[in-house]
Amino acid sequence: MSADERESGPACPLPVASSATIRLAHGGGGRLMHDLLQDIIWPAFANPAAETDCDSATLCLPPGRQAFTTDSFVVRPTFFPGGDIGKLAVCGTVNDLAMVGARPLYLSVGFILEEGWPVDDLRRVVASMRAAADAAQVQIVTGDTKVVDHGKGDGIYVNTSGVGVLEHDLTLTPAALQPGDVIIVSGDVGRHGMAVMSAREGLAFEQALESDCAALAAPVQALLAAGCTPRVMRDCTRGGLATALIEIARTGGARLRIEGRAVPVTAAVRGACELLGMDPLYVANEGCFCVVLPPDQAERALTVLRRDPACARAVHIGEVLETQTRGQLWYRNELGVDRILDWLSGEQLPRIC
Image 1 (cartoon, rainbow, N blue to C red):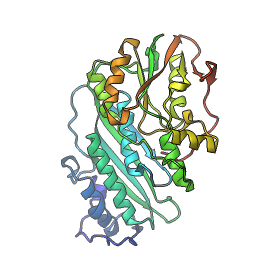
Image 2: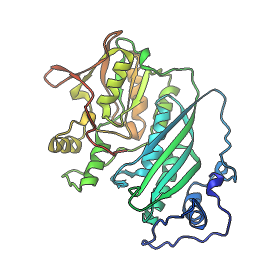
Image 3: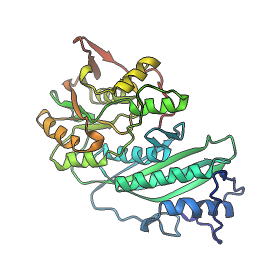
Image 4: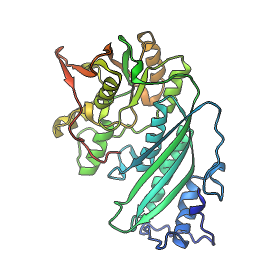
């Protein structure tokens, strides 16, 4: 953690009672902030790289190309079936690195906390972040914590940045698409968005909805280790699978087609979407990605992906029809009728990540 967060003075641990709340340390630091960090933040993220009194973490990076990403998380509610804002922040940043084929190494974390937010909720969030980081084999090495006035922060916002290393010579880009390339999706779609929606609105469905929030670095690294050479990968977060593929098609100037009956959607998600008038193809995921690769690698890729629990439902859903054309995503329904899918004019579900 940076020196801004390491105020001098003896520790005075915060109360552990459930009624304890975040208090505002006017003046930008001091005893209250020190106590918050000493009692909750530092113990949760302790590791050799973070144990320094300097303003920055000093990192040892392997030779070769590095990848760097940053993201902010404002999901509401903070806790939802299958995860919370802490797990989401770690997995989301790890997955952004994974989509360029990088092996994630280090994360930073910034917390914006609202005065009056329960301390026990912060404990839950940082414990969740540590567990997710350990599972993804990344270290949280630096960060920052700020407290804002009551009513100005909606509990907690989180920013994470990540650094990873690319241990291959591939450049993953939609420009590399070739006619005949296959499109694979790593799992069923729409679960994260619908799980958050049900928790936010207090909706109860006959079948339980749980977010698919998961880190995807391990299955991606397994793909590369198996000799697969993806043209491009994209995690299906905001805007869901459809938006991810539309972006690939338009950026690469290619016409793609997916088979509707091949796209995996659970009965719970399908039922919830029908009830609420939503299309699962456009509902966000946080543990699902699409990959486009040469056709002769399709079976190998599916075999590798299905070995990972997060990708057990990986399936071939479509192909690249042609390139050097107007970028379009075509959808073939169960009756064999094709239609063009386009971006939504707005977000179906705001604040789902």
